[in-house]
Image (tube, rainbow, N blue to C red; front, side, top):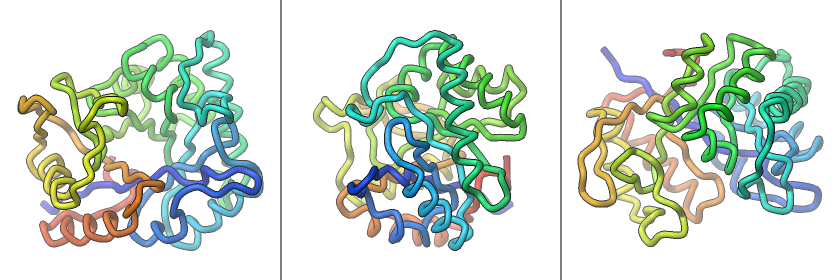
Length: 254
């Protein structure tokens, strides 16, 4: 059976006069777009423009909701109540859906600190996932492989996508190595490609300390703001297809 994997990318993360990443150039190489919804980045004009780019390219649209933290780009830990977390999600999903032609989105991938905190904080992940379910139970919840996002999403009856990162090192427990640590971001193109292929084809990864870990890769995240992001996306797609892996939106196989 032909293997399938989704390529996702965080897009629409500009704001006002500021632009961020290589959104238009990356569209031909990805299958799903995580579009910022105005809290950590993005604004109505940026959201509309990014949605149109994705629809024109045939790329599946998903929401990329975060904490209300424009100053910190959503990367600062914020303590919120379950009610706040749930309603932050509902608000941002509703805003993005309104810009789409079909008024429907494929998936939801939390951003930044919300994503990282929810990976281990089941109460936070559950509150956010309940917001997703309240908007549309058919939505796919995207979370770090092996994290609380996937556990609570399944418990709430949502489809879930196990996400891996093409250019990030892993701890032995499968969590991402903090960016503050040397070696957290993998810059060697050949290594990024070989690691990604191994996660998809073999379901295995090597942690930063050399430990071998099992991992499920439904969707690979490609960062839009990394220097050389377009070249990486192009090369990774080519190598995946040569290995018999089909790149398709996650809804096609989950």
